[in-house]
Image (cartoon, rainbow, N blue to C red):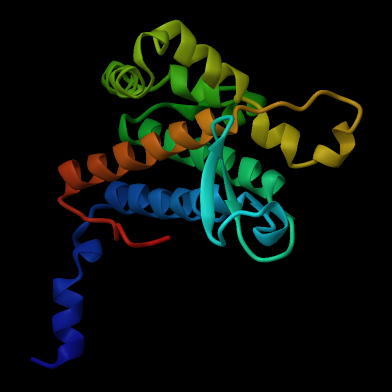
Length: 205
């Protein structure tokens, strides 16, 4: 048996059914948008100018700020847009898994994170509430979490054209958005592993 034939037989992706392949492709898409701009790459301030050791990362107001080099670099807009789009794809992946009928949603609702989240199953919500409770304590109750998800519901739509909203107040809890996105990433990865015995490359950025 030559190596080409062996690779074809051993490729676990080829053994997945159509639904499994779709979930994997959705996961890979979401993962790439999630990691397009890492949290510590969102805001980079010059280290020497601020008398801080090069390659220092601090958390400021729930946001990671890096100090390195001699230039100020801001990637806030792509960070917010990419993270919110990743959340949308992760949520749609979870809805595809439970055979949700997307035709029940209006066009504008297909991009609304809160609307997508509300249609996920109860198990995901239970795990989500437990995750945030462990991370933030008693303040992270169901009402708090759902309010935060509601607050980021239309971020992708609004921030894609942020230059058209210069006279409006544009505030996003980037820390919550990033944490929520990270939770969805791990949940989706574990779901694919448990249902299809398929490991998405954890080292993929």
